[in-house]
Length: 132
Image (cartoon, rainbow, N blue to C red):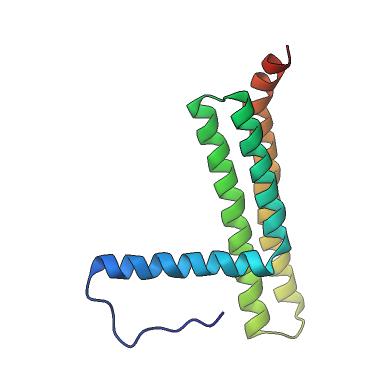
């Protein structure tokens, strides 16, 4: 994906926001095409949404789950952006850069593991009630 900046700034704030939204959507599409890890998170999110729908969770539980899903997806997108930027600017291996990339990946892992625990706390009571 090549980013091209227009030679002039759109006059309307609405047009500027529309451009930003289009850029964000293009970024998400690029990540979906190039990042297998994102698909794992999207699959897990789909499962969570299906379970939450079946259990007919209360609004507050939905809010917590949606925040966790958004956090993990955002962390994965940020990690992917860092990886792409680094590989573009510095394609040869560098130990310091590799360590930074590992830290970014660890941030995704921390968010995902934390979200699993939060999800269990939020969903398990309803699931156990549903089973009985």
